[in-house]
Image (cartoon, rainbow, N blue to C red; front, top):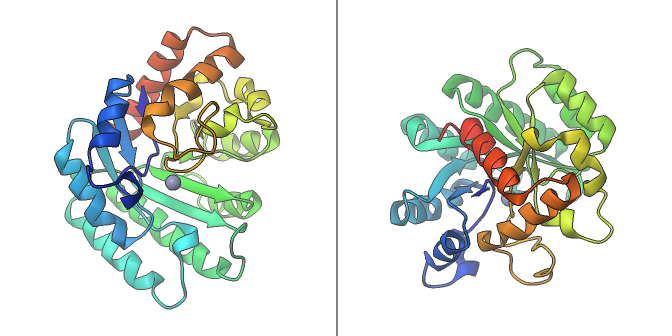
Length: 258
Ligand SMILES: [Zn+2]
């Protein structure tokens, strides 16, 4: 099993930087993809990756809620220079995207940052990890303007509707959907969307330290909890968990080319 979206490099995981990675390895997770949120993510992601190179993969990107008028450009420039200097060491650009839930006042800058990161993905031939919260129509507009030259994309922690899935597929037929702990929550609409998405387009993720799945809900999330998410997807889709593991692992390896 692969956790395609986990922030195990954050200080939340304590002094022993590898402990959470090692617990995940013990629970059957073979690989963890580490998305960045700003330029300050680069060093801790590099450090964790250097300690567990076989079990982790690096991304760099500027998250829409980390876009502040006074410094987003300098963060972007550092991220760009890191990616341009070591493109082969990175598996994706992200996380990046649009977020109108937390702060609508930065939308224009969010667009600029998203455009710049999509340009970079195009130049460096890297896939992108999308964070999109309450901004699907704006994201679709942005994608429409680049139709035909979009990089591969995963919508991490997918929170759109079934109609949004069709709209996304018209623009990017092989778009992937990151499914995490939310699928185990009582009021989640995600279980209804799983058959529409289909097992071949699902990537497993925790988004640790946030959004721990049931029965760990409320605790600090970590990649070791991926099996709870895989089990819930398996039961919703009437598939053996081994098949969910096999297919989502192959999809993640193909998407991130690892
Ligand atoms: Zn994240």
